[in-house]
Image (cartoon, rainbow, N blue to C red; front, side, top):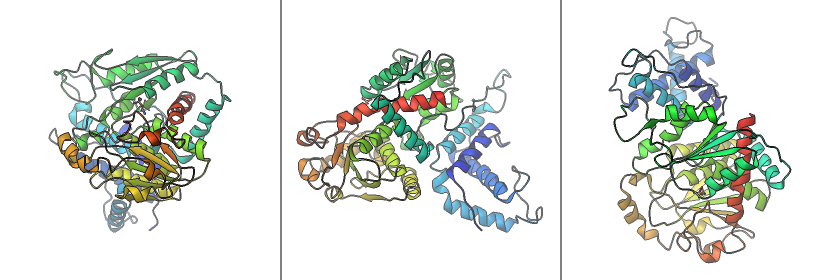
Length: 462
Ligand code: CP
């Protein structure tokens, strides 16, 4: 049996199911596992019926009902898909979005709410990929086109103003220098008007969970917030860091997912719990600019920091590097592994791009021959909710997991040092390295502007 299932297949099927959910009402006490089973079941039937051209997509095939496929064939198919495609749909943003839709259904979205008023369904009209949430939603060709567009903006060859007469909302739950300034400047240079909002500061506190009784401290729901903003603005950027409290919950990027689910205009991820794609695009532009096109030996290394930090930057850097075919090594101490599903996505994308991803706990050796050294600290998945345990665990890595001159001497001639900034000097990287000719951190920060202009132009022009 030859079966080819791509992430695009899964995306399309998830979109179909979200538009037309299976006729199941979850019991209020249904667990996430039961919802996940339901999602898996719905996907399997759609995949199966599509592959074997069976007429009824929502009905489990009975052994005698069809000459082919038989129940045995179905079982074989299920076994095959279960072993083959875990990494596809379990790592998929679309599945997370679909699960949210089904949770909403469980919470009451598919039945009349109290008072008999139908719950308004979440809009699904944006063409895919209508948002910029993670580079993983975009193909390698898409990313190549964005990089070329960014380079044209930087060289001054593109002076178009696709945002003329338009506004873009920038929603910041967390502090920022580079993202905020470069987005504001970029919108201005594209002819538009930035509208900066800080929920809980300059705008109301926001609830993102569907189906909750809002009798706590949250004033407004994302469902209204983004749709109102969408009536004023051509796109919405949002920054929402991980709180580092609940790994299982935060790894799903629930706030970003709620923005994307409810918005009628494109959402741009300005760093969420799990991804920072604008940073990653600027990083890829910087590597290309400094070292030329083509695959490079790229090292992403963990570094000691006094407190645990989110994983968005390393996740997105690694993913984009794999998508663009770089030979990637990830170095971190034991216990600081990246998300399992992200790692399978990395391997999948690296395979597609004809390259490999290596993971090591040996920081020094990882520098040997590297052309790009990208430093970043992040927290351990094990210690979300208990930062004091992470701080105690990482204490032994202080002064050892730092980018210094001795390690940089192990890199290839012309090797560069990168960091997304802000960076703690003489903690993550020594003065000697960040102030050396190898350091490209300022150009990297500048490239945020050009990369984001390319993203905004693409999203509003289509
Ligand atoms: N690299 C980055 O996102 O910087 P800011 O946090 O200052 O926006």
